[in-house]
Length: 261
Image 1 (cartoon, helix red, strand yellow):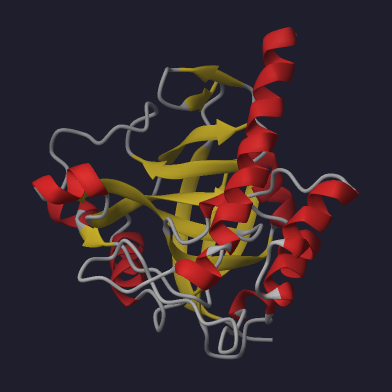
Image 2 (cartoon, one colour):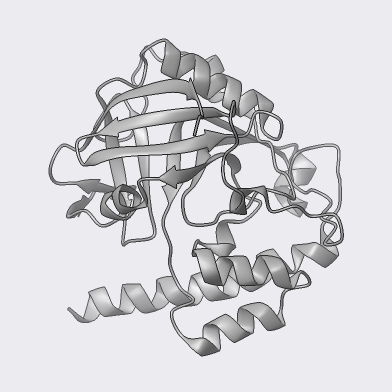
């Protein structure tokens, strides 16, 4: 019980401090020849995930063993990752794949052919080498769907000083929420946010601030947040790398469609 409580405390502190670091990106972010950093301009930021889907928007309908969720896709912001996801979904790749990680209510990870979350030997490596796409309008709010990072290509200099080109692939993460559970944490978030709308959005919508601008966001759940919460709160066994659900929780199918009222 003590170790469980300590883990929760560590996670909360990590989220809060990491969230402050992410929000300071508003001031310090810079554009380099790789995809490590992006320019963030608080004056031109448009938090599109707070908007409802519009008729004709591309959506994904995800059927899981715990219910259905739907998310709008953002091909105009993350074109390569969204293209990769759509092609895999339409090919039937995600049918009967595993939810392989359920992290203490914070998020879940899915889309693996193996329950362990590892890639099978015969996997198409090109699908796992899509360059990471970051955008100032996309953030890790609750319900954000992110293409998981797979590897990073670094020069010798970058290994020492930081940087590199990051890649993502077929597996995806669905953000739930962690931290910002009391007024002090919320106020700290607002005080350190150059853009108050963004800080307030994390408070109102939930999410994980310290994941911001670290993964490619491909979509936002607009229906089925109860399923998002359930997937992040499964009974698990720790494999040393992932918290694997004890029961087989599956992605039964993913259908690509268009949103309509």
